[in-house]
Amino acid sequence: MHTLGRLHLITDTRPGRDTLTVVAAALRAGFDTVQVRPEDDVTDRAAYELTVRVLELCRAGGATCLVNDRLHVALAAGADGGHVGADDLPVAAARRILGPGAVLGATARNPRAARQAVADGASYLGVGPAFATTTKTGLPDAIGPAGVRAVVRAVDVPVVAIGGVTAARAAELFAVGAHAVAVVSAVNSAVDPGAAAAEFAALVSR
Ligand SMILES: Cc1ncc(COP(=O)(O)OP(=O)(O)O)c(N)n1
Ligand SMILES: Cc1ncsc1CCOP(=O)(O)O
Ligand SMILES: [Mg+2]
Image 1: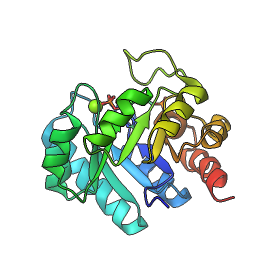
Image 2 (image 1 turned 135 degrees about the vertical axis):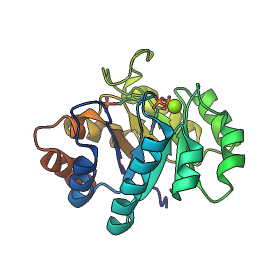
Image 3 (image 1 turned 180 degrees about the vertical axis):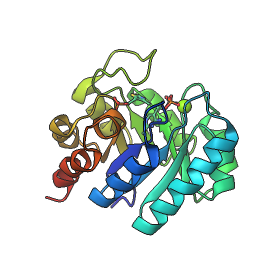
C-alpha cells in the first residue's frame, strides 16, 4: 500500500494564472498532492514564498507538498519532498540533500532509467509524457499508456503518469498500473479549475 497521493496538481506560475486559487480549489475537490513548479524565471525568493503559501494550504487539507527542481526551497519551507529530472541534481545527490525520510520523485521514461532512479533513492517516478502536451517544450514523443505500463512493471515504487493527462484519459493510465496522475493544464487552464479537479477526484474515489 502506497501512502503517496493519487492526484498531483502541478502549479502553473505562468502569467495570467492565479496559482494559489487553483491550488485551493483542487485541494477542496480532492487532490491530495501539490507539486510547486515555479518557471525558471521565478526567483528563489518568490519560489520560497509560493511554497510557504502552498504548504499552508496542503497542511490544512491534509495533502502532500513537493517542490520541483529547487530542493533548497523544499527544505527551507519544510515541504514533504521534491522532484528531479535529467537537468536537475542527480537522484542520489537529491536523496542526500533531502534525507532518508523525504518524498523524492525522479523523472524516468523507460524501464532502465526507472530502475536506476529507484536504486539511487527515488521513492516515486514521474513517467511521461504519457500523451502530447504543450506545457513543457523539448520533450520526447509521448510514450502512451504502453510506455507507462513498461515502467510500472519494472519497479516497485509508485508511478506518477504525467503529460497531456485529462480526466478523460486518466483512466487509461490507472488501468496500466499508474498509481497517480500529475496534471498542469487540465486543472490550471480550466475555466472552472474546481470542477475540472472534481472530475479527476471522481475517478479515484470509486
Ligand atoms: C511527477 C512529475 N514527473 C515529471 C516531471 C518533470 O520533471 P523534469 O523532467 O525535471 O522537468 P521539469 O518539470 O523540471 O521542467 C515533474 N515535474 N513531475
Ligand atoms: C512537466 C512535465 N514533464 C513531462 S510533461 C510535463 C508537463 C505536463 O503538463 P500538462 O499536464 O499540461 O500536459
Ligand atoms: Mg526538473
